[in-house]
Image (cartoon, rainbow, N blue to C red; front, side):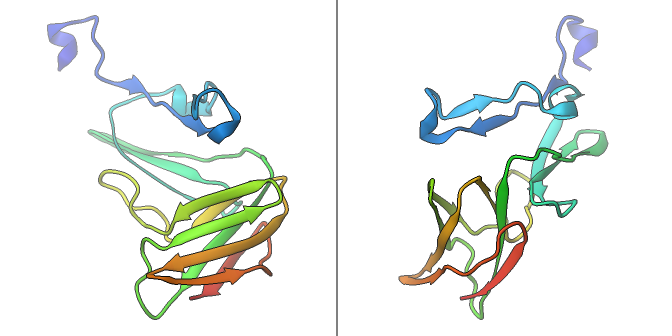
Length: 161
Protein backbone atom coordinates (compact mmCIF):
# COMPACT_ATOMS: atom_id res chain seq x y z
CA UNK A 1 0.00 0.00 0.00
CA UNK A 2 1.61 3.24 -1.17
CA UNK A 3 0.11 5.24 1.72
CA UNK A 4 2.22 3.30 4.25
CA UNK A 5 5.43 4.36 2.50
CA UNK A 6 4.50 7.87 1.45
CA UNK A 7 1.35 9.22 3.10
CA UNK A 8 1.12 12.19 0.72
CA UNK A 9 0.90 9.91 -2.33
CA UNK A 10 -2.40 8.49 -3.53
CA UNK A 11 -2.64 5.63 -5.96
CA UNK A 12 -6.32 6.10 -6.70
CA UNK A 13 -7.03 9.10 -8.91
CA UNK A 14 -9.98 10.84 -10.48
CA UNK A 15 -10.78 9.78 -14.04
CA UNK A 16 -10.35 12.18 -16.91
CA UNK A 17 -12.86 12.66 -19.71
CA UNK A 18 -12.12 14.61 -22.88
CA UNK A 19 -14.45 16.05 -25.52
CA UNK A 20 -13.29 15.76 -29.13
CA UNK A 21 -13.98 19.29 -30.29
CA UNK A 22 -12.50 18.60 -33.73
CA UNK A 23 -11.39 21.62 -35.72
CA UNK A 24 -13.83 23.98 -34.00
CA UNK A 25 -11.55 24.72 -31.04
CA UNK A 26 -7.98 25.77 -30.37
CA UNK A 27 -7.25 22.27 -29.01
CA UNK A 28 -8.83 19.12 -30.45
CA UNK A 29 -9.42 17.42 -27.09
CA UNK A 30 -10.93 19.55 -24.32
CA UNK A 31 -11.11 18.29 -20.71
CA UNK A 32 -14.70 17.90 -19.50
CA UNK A 33 -14.75 19.49 -16.06
CA UNK A 34 -18.18 18.36 -14.92
CA UNK A 35 -18.92 14.75 -15.85
CA UNK A 36 -20.81 13.65 -12.75
CA UNK A 37 -19.30 10.90 -10.63
CA UNK A 38 -16.90 9.90 -13.43
CA UNK A 39 -14.63 12.84 -12.63
CA UNK A 40 -15.38 12.98 -8.87
CA UNK A 41 -14.69 9.43 -7.65
CA UNK A 42 -11.11 8.34 -6.94
CA UNK A 43 -10.47 5.00 -8.66
CA UNK A 44 -7.72 2.62 -9.66
CA UNK A 45 -9.19 2.00 -13.09
CA UNK A 46 -7.93 -0.69 -15.44
CA UNK A 47 -10.25 -0.72 -18.42
CA UNK A 48 -13.13 1.25 -19.86
CA UNK A 49 -15.87 0.19 -22.22
CA UNK A 50 -18.79 2.09 -23.59
CA UNK A 51 -22.15 1.40 -25.13
CA UNK A 52 -25.72 2.59 -25.02
CA UNK A 53 -26.62 0.72 -21.81
CA UNK A 54 -29.97 2.48 -21.31
CA UNK A 55 -30.93 2.66 -25.03
CA UNK A 56 -31.34 6.43 -25.12
CA UNK A 57 -28.88 7.18 -27.94
CA UNK A 58 -25.85 8.32 -25.98
CA UNK A 59 -22.79 6.41 -24.84
CA UNK A 60 -22.58 5.22 -21.25
CA UNK A 61 -19.26 4.10 -19.71
CA UNK A 62 -18.24 1.12 -17.56
CA UNK A 63 -14.87 1.32 -15.79
CA UNK A 64 -13.27 -1.72 -14.15
CA UNK A 65 -11.16 -1.22 -11.04
CA UNK A 66 -8.49 -3.07 -9.11
CA UNK A 67 -9.99 -4.92 -6.09
CA UNK A 68 -13.31 -3.09 -6.42
CA UNK A 69 -16.57 -3.53 -8.31
CA UNK A 70 -16.86 -2.01 -11.79
CA UNK A 71 -18.47 1.44 -11.96
CA UNK A 72 -21.26 2.25 -14.41
CA UNK A 73 -21.62 5.87 -15.47
CA UNK A 74 -24.90 6.66 -17.23
CA UNK A 75 -24.77 9.56 -19.69
CA UNK A 76 -27.92 11.66 -19.28
CA UNK A 77 -26.93 14.52 -21.56
CA UNK A 78 -29.32 15.79 -24.20
CA UNK A 79 -27.09 17.13 -26.93
CA UNK A 80 -29.10 16.55 -30.09
CA UNK A 81 -29.85 13.90 -32.67
CA UNK A 82 -28.06 10.60 -33.15
CA UNK A 83 -28.10 7.56 -35.37
CA UNK A 84 -27.27 3.98 -34.47
CA UNK A 85 -25.76 1.71 -37.13
CA UNK A 86 -25.55 -2.07 -37.01
CA UNK A 87 -24.17 -3.83 -40.08
CA UNK A 88 -25.38 -7.24 -41.24
CA UNK A 89 -22.91 -8.97 -43.52
CA UNK A 90 -22.15 -12.52 -44.63
CA UNK A 91 -18.45 -11.76 -44.27
CA UNK A 92 -16.60 -10.20 -41.32
CA UNK A 93 -16.49 -6.43 -41.65
CA UNK A 94 -14.65 -5.39 -38.49
CA UNK A 95 -12.62 -2.32 -39.45
CA UNK A 96 -15.07 -1.09 -42.11
CA UNK A 97 -15.03 2.68 -42.57
CA UNK A 98 -18.29 4.51 -41.89
CA UNK A 99 -18.55 8.02 -43.34
CA UNK A 100 -21.42 10.11 -42.01
CA UNK A 101 -22.35 13.21 -44.02
CA UNK A 102 -24.65 15.86 -42.54
CA UNK A 103 -25.44 19.41 -43.57
CA UNK A 104 -22.93 20.50 -40.89
CA UNK A 105 -19.95 18.36 -41.88
CA UNK A 106 -18.53 14.85 -42.20
CA UNK A 107 -17.50 12.29 -39.58
CA UNK A 108 -15.46 9.14 -40.23
CA UNK A 109 -15.55 6.14 -37.88
CA UNK A 110 -14.36 2.55 -37.97
CA UNK A 111 -16.65 -0.37 -37.18
CA UNK A 112 -14.99 -2.21 -34.31
CA UNK A 113 -15.56 -3.92 -30.98
CA UNK A 114 -12.18 -3.16 -29.44
CA UNK A 115 -11.34 0.35 -28.31
CA UNK A 116 -9.62 -0.02 -24.94
CA UNK A 117 -7.20 -2.25 -23.04
CA UNK A 118 -8.90 -5.34 -21.53
CA UNK A 119 -12.34 -4.40 -22.80
CA UNK A 120 -14.76 -4.71 -25.66
CA UNK A 121 -17.44 -2.27 -26.72
CA UNK A 122 -20.91 -2.77 -28.13
CA UNK A 123 -20.81 -3.87 -31.78
CA UNK A 124 -22.53 -1.15 -33.73
CA UNK A 125 -21.89 2.57 -33.86
CA UNK A 126 -23.75 5.41 -32.26
CA UNK A 127 -23.01 8.62 -34.10
CA UNK A 128 -23.91 11.98 -32.65
CA UNK A 129 -25.45 14.33 -35.21
CA UNK A 130 -26.00 17.36 -33.01
CA UNK A 131 -28.64 19.43 -34.75
CA UNK A 132 -27.39 18.50 -38.21
CA UNK A 133 -29.56 16.94 -40.91
CA UNK A 134 -28.36 13.49 -42.02
CA UNK A 135 -27.57 13.46 -45.75
CA UNK A 136 -26.03 10.00 -46.21
CA UNK A 137 -23.89 7.29 -44.69
CA UNK A 138 -21.26 5.46 -46.74
CA UNK A 139 -19.85 2.12 -45.57
CA UNK A 140 -16.55 1.05 -47.17
CA UNK A 141 -14.69 -2.22 -46.75
CA UNK A 142 -12.15 -4.04 -48.97
CA UNK A 143 -12.58 -1.74 -51.99
CA UNK A 144 -16.38 -1.99 -51.82
CA UNK A 145 -18.62 0.93 -50.82
CA UNK A 146 -22.35 1.30 -50.33
CA UNK A 147 -24.25 4.52 -49.69
CA UNK A 148 -27.37 4.72 -47.50
CA UNK A 149 -29.48 7.86 -47.54
CA UNK A 150 -32.88 6.79 -46.20
CA UNK A 151 -32.00 6.00 -42.60
CA UNK A 152 -33.97 7.18 -39.58
CA UNK A 153 -32.45 9.28 -36.84
CA UNK A 154 -32.73 8.86 -33.06
CA UNK A 155 -32.92 5.08 -33.25
CA UNK A 156 -30.90 2.05 -34.39
CA UNK A 157 -30.73 1.14 -38.09
CA UNK A 158 -29.61 -2.25 -39.39
CA UNK A 159 -28.05 -2.10 -42.83
CA UNK A 160 -27.05 -4.91 -45.19
CA UNK A 161 -23.55 -4.87 -46.63
